[in-house]
Image (cartoon, rainbow, N blue to C red; front, side, top):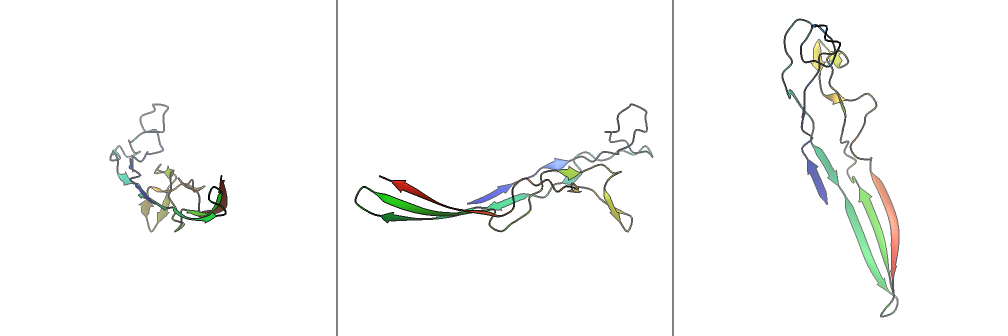
Length: 122
């Protein structure tokens, strides 16, 4: 099963309060310019889940199913939270890296996980 999701857009915040509104969550920068709305295109979500199941008949009415499942099979990181304040983003060579994953890497899905199980029918 393949899951794809558009993670949407974010608007960066200046992280400063140039107009003394007691609110640092604003799109107005200290120099008076305005941060564009929805200027950060978040990376899309991708996830592949797989399941293998085999039925073993014991009698005509009794059976056991062996089940093996993998979630996020390709171990793709799908970030759910982003650092979008211009005062806290990473800079390299003078370039702002807006929309980089948050410091604690809050992901939308768990890393690759596997489970093994069985089901008895009678």
